[in-house]
Length: 240
Image 1: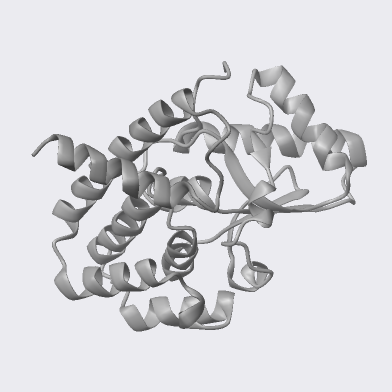
Image 2 (image 1 turned 90 degrees about the vertical axis):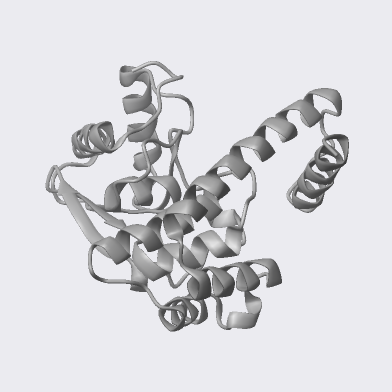
């Protein structure tokens, strides 16, 4: 697999199986490891609307040798550096309560237990992150749409409970995210909204890439949403 090929639902398990095999080589059969998939990898594992993700974000609970196993698998399979990483734990959408509310996914090689986050808890995390240039918003819509199709629709109260369980209070969620999910749950039309927000995210990412080419090193996590809003407003003015 070359570094420019994304992870899909099909090859996700292949990579995790290879990781379990390598970890077992290093530690034997009596040393367990645990990974909680979040973000795009969790969406791939639990839902069918998302085609791919470009890295695997996870909470990793294992001995330090898991890093050697990750690197070895990456080298053997031609995966990009950091193909599986725990950088997410340094973001605002991380919560130490994730372990409690994660769900069993699969066990690989008798040593690697993989868990995921799904349903209202994945929605809560996506809302906390709320990145306009990623898949956060369209993922929320996609999850709501698929859970509804399964006959298990999520309610606003379920989402509020998940937010409180992970982040302590509904008020700790950004105001934009609270307004967004409240309006979505009130209005429906999930199919139309999914296409709309997916298109918006693609446009935002393209504008951001062009901006960073012109002004390298300017964007950071504190100003990126304001920059995207400014770029969108400028584009709308140009099209008038």
